[in-house]
Length: 297
Image (tube, rainbow, N blue to C red):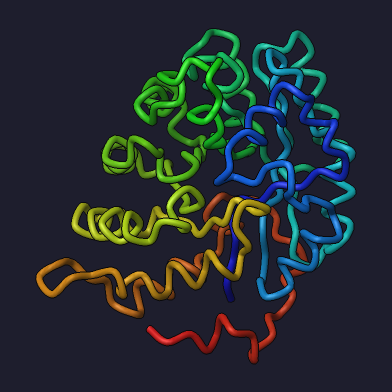
């Protein structure tokens, strides 16, 4: 029963606007301009999974918007596995109306990116949004986007920036994306403070030598159950992300920490819908002959 708590999809590259697309296209390692981000490609990528979340993006200051209707269309490609989260910019003047539109498309949570949006999570307007989300039972995913955007105030992306919202809204489920990279220790400290906070693996699955100590620290701090599987598709495929998690012990040295195979498999099979308190899709059974189920540990 593998899951994926963070994927993206957009059918038209112009949705990202040249400012953002051009920034990543100059990075030879990201291959941003060559990514296949279509809804059909996402549907194919999640076939080995039981369920996944597809995230919208909305950053007014960058001119970036993946519309709620597009996220709903991506979900429609595989309603057996996919659940959509709406991209909401708390600093947009119509954020409240956008939340209502997202509800009409049955998008069950919201995605924000504090650094990319130029919005501190404790901004007064943002706090009103968190209050609404808590009241409506809508979890929030903080996307790990801002650290790669030169114009973004990177400190707004720190995991500790969520301290006040977490204290003020103890029933609000918050996912700090990408293990809080580059502040993984700070992210883990936040998880120890707040049981309603979670993180996911998308920023570390391509660097398993960094993923291993992060998971080992999570285990030693007693917060391993707050780690969710995430690929960040299309930057990594769900299958590759799950393989990275399941085989992460290959990067352990003789004296270094290891995680049990059962603990690693538990991360990949963590039911993200139950944890975040949202309605699950039809939850298709996975293909038992998929490579994921046969990986050596």
